[in-house]
Image (cartoon, rainbow, N blue to C red; front, side, top):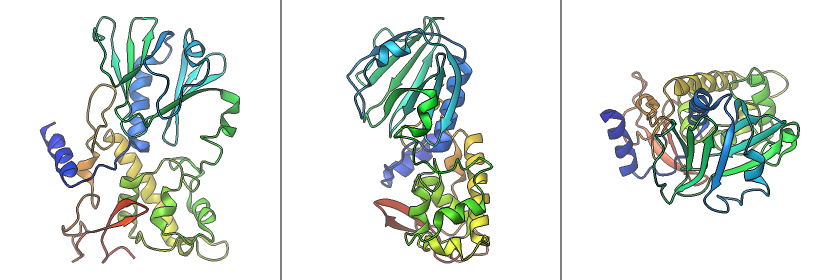
Length: 303
């Protein structure tokens, strides 16, 4: 725990405050919520303000109360509470959103000013949604209309699904003149990736973040080696990060308060000025800004 705290404070001291929960962090939250809430009935919802990033939809509180949580899913960076009656409660954590779970009789007597949504379950358990910056948002929709919802209509492939392969990536990158780092952050290309993991993926794949996206796609119908490496490393990095409980850089913690420890496995992110992680490479990790975000990479071995 002390090592995790040290890494977190070190990165924050260097100015890395751009972190928001990415796919591994959201998946970690999903697992924690499912373990405690699946099959439970929502008895009461307390909305302690009119909205978060966006106003709560009309009838939100009434639509949730009395519903059973039948399934917990994730799409990109969205949590999907599947409720009886073919309803889905969507939650995006934004930058600082988090859930804290309390068993019966353990909930605090008073809630903090940033505790915006209090969910009381029929068994007496409580789930508290806290969001200091209020960049998160929620919605309640008919499950069968989800594919056309404004949050989901243009999302790309789930990176851990069989649909995401080198051919699909090449197709998404055809004709794109943007840098590959920018393209991988585009949720229309691949869903759920964020700045930290894209830096790590590009490093492991040996691909420069400055490389023009269309060069990854290649020509004709053949897939490129770079596309294959990017897909393989995307899946591997995400799997490792999920197993580690995500990366705690700023405010992220799982629903039980545990911190993610994938930050210990960073090979490039936050390592500006340090030697390249590849032992045979004489390069030094550099940091540049792309789209207002810090990009960490090795100029020697990422081509």
